[in-house]
Length: 167
Image (cartoon, rainbow, N blue to C red; front, side, top):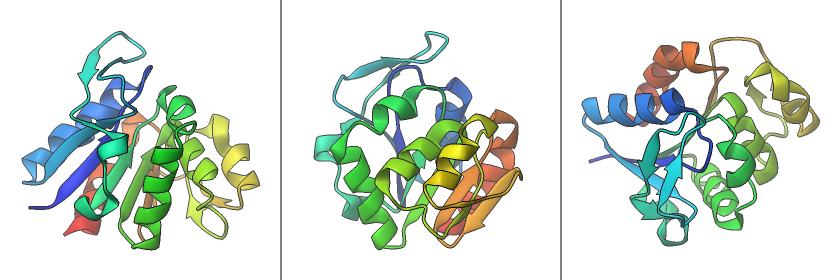
């Protein structure tokens, strides 16, 4: 069974965590909420999410893909050396890395954007461009193993591409 890490941290965007988490389960994949070790997190709206695995215990070899949601969570996720190492290792292995909205901050901090084509929430366009990426304003952009989208309205296309990338 294919296994997908869905990253979670404080102030996450509800739909960008739960829509992929549930949609990918519906497809038959095992989804796992991976957090930075706090056990419980609240979304920007206060909706709770409980960590199923701490990042310190997450081995890239155990996952086929990772989903990086938006909200303000990426600002916390990018401060975790373990999160950045997971992203770098999975990228080196050619595994699917799916980032939506502000998730591009994590990609920039992991140093994997140089020479890549991506999209993100418009407010962080400068950040991803300054990290070396080419920015496109499209609902979903696929560059090899990297899948990016802009916002919750793009979730259907985002999840379709994740599913294609994993199968």
